[in-house]
Amino acid sequence: MQLRVCANAEHGNILLSAVFDNLGKGASGAPVQNLDLMLTRQQAAPA
Image (cartoon, rainbow, N blue to C red; front, side, top):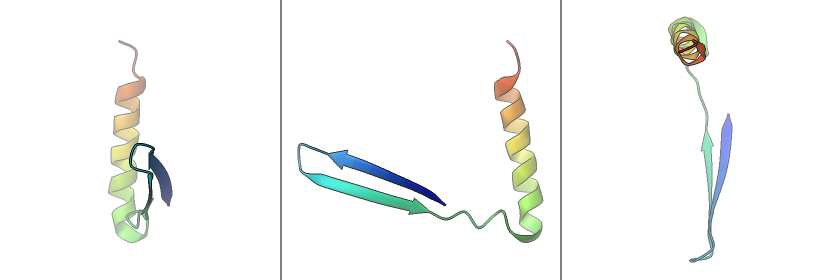
């Protein structure tokens, strides 16, 4: 679960956003984890 809070002082608004990731459950979790590993390794690779 990710929670984010954004404020707009000009208009006096606050936005609370909650994102629940259900892809980590069951058989769909492995491809998502593999994609995350591949992207993390690409970003962490020395230039």
